[in-house]
Image (cartoon, rainbow, N blue to C red):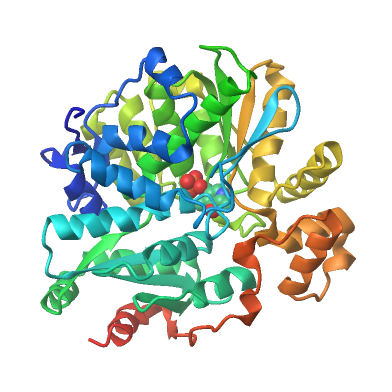
Length: 504
Ligand SMILES: *Cc1c(COP(=O)(O)O)cnc(C)c1O
């Protein structure tokens, strides 16, 4: 048995809690995010002993560090075997590594049931919560609320469907997600899945959910009716530790195929929004994975790029809707965890910074902390035209199709190479299947006119015909499935919508 792991708050405002408590609560009720009390350290010897492990076996080792001893070896084994399996992922390898040239590799994170990397964690979390319900003999049902700009909603619905003891409710902005994303959500099966469209934008949905969490009377009413709120957004630690696994997996794949030698450092490029995925890469590095740089790639909503360049986080800027919508974010929630670690776990400082962010939409860092960040992170961004032209150039150069989010990553990697000319082997995280964004992809490959006035399903087929790539299973026949009735509400009626859907 490994050492027990407890969780502390980034704002130093609570006593350590168990993994069970941290995951069930989702975030620290007094404000702050849960982080592990210590970061596990993995020796090179241990790392190399994992070289031939399948994805689920590797996951079992990594999960154990973060869940011990709240969950037994057998429980963890059962969890990973159920999740990282052919039934849910369209690839034996779960996250296959594709070689583009002798230095550059793509880690495909989009073979899960909804075609985006979020599946890797959102398939795990529901099973873990379900075990927690049993362990605590909870008599109430867990009510998971999610706000989505498109990808998280479907991944959460798919993960939580038919999980006993849990109801899941997703709020999405009406007509602000793609047709495919909307259909993906509305065609989810399961008797515990609920979808609410609000008349507003993503921020309105996020606010609605936050308000429900904060509304005491409303919570009391929910409790009385047998519901306890929890969160499946990436502020929940239960979303983060599963993402550490694929960074180890990528490194071990490189080693196994002799692309790198023992101890050789590599770079990871991560298309970033909420700073969750790249934070998982940082944890992997802290745990002992030989990583040189983490390359943080943003779209034109480049609040993080500016932050890493000048130490000032400033969310007071226009929100721009882009072709990489899952990165259209001005408040990167998981940055709080990174700042906590990089400031030597100064909870007081983090408390102050987050208060400034809430009050003024802005905070700044002292020089030494800023410099410490730049030792590890290179940050850059791509505008819309650059994103589109990168999709095309990657296709022409490597005959490999990337989605707009991944293209942002490739563009920023090219910028990095122009400055550094590094020989370090580099892995780019491919966060979504290009077929989810057929319109943008086809418009750059074949020209604007080729997509004009065409339905998304027509574009999907045309992209498949043009590239000779099959339409991923999870996107096939979406237009033929039964859809839920659209539940559309004004943005200030989110609570009412919830009560009606749950028949309270
Ligand atoms: C969520 C998402 C991102 C951003 O990931 P973060 O963890 O929020 O930084 C990037 N690409 C895709 C396709 C996503 O769905």
